[in-house]
Image (tube, rainbow, N blue to C red):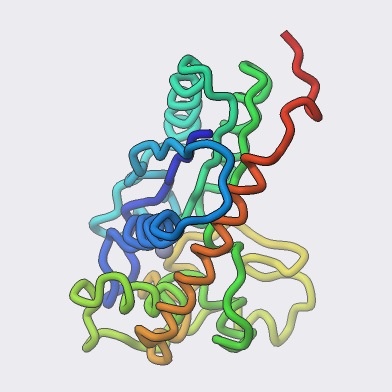
Length: 245
Ligand SMILES: [Zn+2]
């Protein structure tokens, strides 16, 4: 199988670097592959894609973003190259919340075009160690909050501006008082948002509670989940899928 790591280069508020998603993606991947685990054959790791679709962050300096069409095409072209080698299983491991849709589209194109098996795993959907942050932070700390700041304090502490760490409130918290369904990310109805809609700083979440130790546990948890995902992708019998021509 091949594994395509995908991240982004985008603003993460005043305290975290533009490379945050790339550092987190690479950090989880390194932690996952540094330990031996049950595998069936090798995992070919493709180069990490450091620029993705970050349209919601383009009003902030430093953000580098490709269009949704371009990112879809890049994934499709890379998948085409993987298929040419004879590999039919591809796992896309993504750390940037704003590009799940383009990954879905590209993965389906690869399925339809080449009958590949393309799995999609997003680090921010891996869950966290039990009780490590409060539910409110989990729901509203979408960008540069306790989770990403903790992971960065563990993986690259020199890149965190400690004097700029703050509790960045979200419009989602205000909305949650009056709405049962509608919020930036649901729970049942969502709306398209630009980063500054949620908080003028471009960041949401309480970064002040972040610690390197929390980050260490979060990265270890994500790495363990990624190892299990890799194993399940490897174990999945292609014969279950309709092969086509
Ligand atoms: Zn991020």
